[in-house]
Length: 221
Image (cartoon, rainbow, N blue to C red; front, top):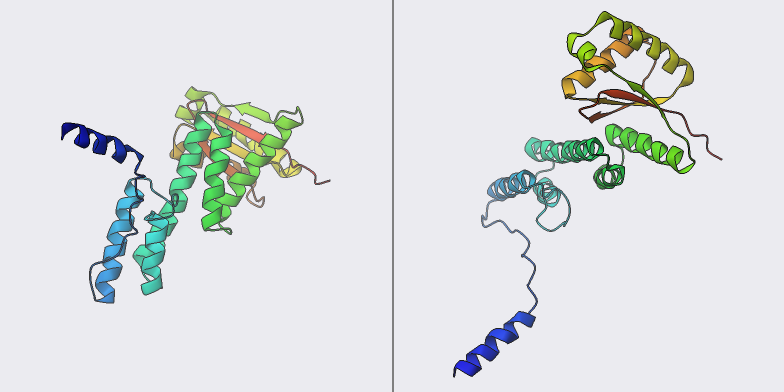
């Protein structure tokens, strides 16, 4: 008998693990079904189960809620949060020097919203950096003094004004790396104040080494 049981325990090792079934609301009323989808989507978002695997992902669950209630603000906001989270994860990958991972995350985000401007601009800037690297070229890196940045030093403000003028002439994209989002916004504001009529194409990333990377426009052959 023991031998038979032991044999059974060995056989079960070869049984494939079944995938988790797709979430299905238990309520009958459509309004309650929407609420169930939203709760499940919020939980998936909190776990960073954003869109892959698609089954039971936050994106799929918010989309199911929108099928039942196309104007649901909670669901629309949830989809926006997914995109913002992908951008945040891409920034985190950049701060670790993992450009390939950042591009992969941005590709996922663009797969959810092909027209999202922030995602498109960030991905284009990183692709151009990769193109420059493959051609043996290096983008120009403008290093920023941490103490000057912390104190909003007038010398740094003047330096940023000079940089803004140069960028307006060259049309280059830039990647602003700063320690916090607040620092990134301040740096961008200095550039914009210096050249208010110029449209700066900016990508931001978090890093302990503040700097601005100038990415030349790659001509299409």
